[in-house]
Length: 204
Image (cartoon, rainbow, N blue to C red; front, side, top):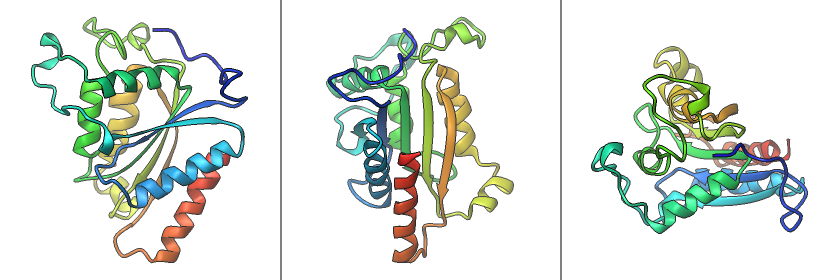
């Protein structure tokens, strides 16, 4: 798998190729508002933004036979692989659930980050086995838990899982993580402030 080349094609635009992945099982809500605002900010800087909304994709999120047996990829997952391969920068927006990433997002990774596409398996970790290297990632994460509590008491398991165990294993470097929390009890004014913050993140 070739490293991500730099810049969009002339027909697409002059900026970076950004893939925004909505990892929430909801069809609307704060995560969608944050992602949409980020995309608006990025497009204002001439970046090319595509999106995948996992809640609307048709696929089995369960890896039923493990990677040893293989599992035929649904059309939406084949398209997702093409979009990931196209992208230079991936932006994931999702809520933390039980200290981890949502089951739908985890199932998406199980199915789409397959051997031969995202990594090679040779018994030990080696940069040569990271088939998606050259790409960067950014995480927009909502939590009900106050961020300091999530980090210092729980150890931020969702953040480490995403940046190290999943993306890092495939060669994708996480460059920025932004927490929007605590969501529970947040006022409408606070939510709108988060949306504006997400838009500015897209501009940078």
